[in-house]
Length: 301
Image 1 (cartoon, rainbow, N blue to C red):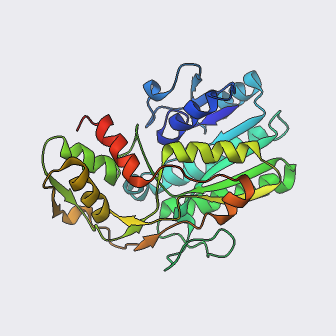
Image 2: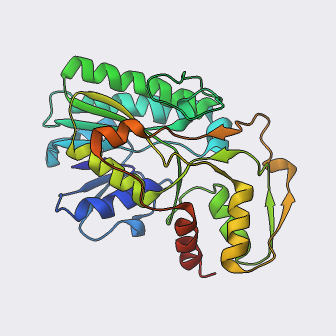
Image 3: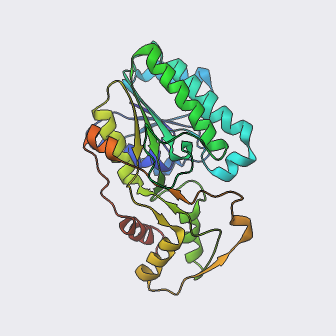
C-alpha cells in the first residue's frame, strides 16, 4: 500500500502499525515537515511532492498499490493562514492530482485524512452526518473542498473510499510546533510556559489510536464512509498543564502571550465516535494522561 505524508506525525505512527500485520508499505513524502528517521525499518520511502504528477505517477505505476492512504497536507494553522495559496494548492489541488492518478490504476481502496476543522462551531459533539460543515479558517476550508473531490472520485469509480475526520492528535514525533510540543519544549528549560487562551477544549487523541483507527477502517473498507476519529472526550490546555503539574510534581506557571491568542476561537471541538465504533468496532485505548506520560519519557523530563 502507499501512504502519502508517511514521514509526518500521523503518517509515521501509521507506518509502524501497518507493518505489524505484514503489509508491504511504501511511503511518499516531500520531507518538508516529515522526518525520514521517524519511519520504521521495512518502509520504503519515495521522496516526492504530491503535486509532481510525473513523480507520483511513476511511483504508483512501479508499486501498483491496492490501497492509498492520503495523509499529505499543510495543516499547521499559522502556516496555512500565512500561506493561503500554498494551502489550497497542496491540500486541494494536490489531492486532486493524487485522485487522478488513482483512477484506472490497481487501487481498490482509498482513505483520505480530513480534519475536525471542517465542522461549524457547536456546543456539543460533532456528528458526521448532522453537524454542519462551516470551517473557521483556510485549513478547514481546504479540507472541505478536498472532501468534495474525494466524494466525486468514489461516485465516478466505485472504489471503496473512506473520509476520516481526525481530531487533535497527540504523541511522539510531532512535526509542527503545536501547543503540546511547545509545552514540552518549554518544560525542558523552565517551569514557565508562554501560552495563549488555555480555556478552549479539544478532543486529544493519541497517534497510536489514530493509526489503529485507520487500520480498522482499511480492514472494513466498502462503499463511501465518513468517520470521526477522536475519543469523545474534551479537555483544555489548562487541564493539560494541571495534569503535567501532577505527573512531574513541578510548580508550572502559565504566562499569557498575546501573540499566541487567536483572533477568533472555537471554545469546544469534540468528536461523536458512535459511527466508527459501529462500523469497525474500533475504540480508543489511550487516555490523555497516558499520552502525556509517554511524552514525558520521550522528552526526557
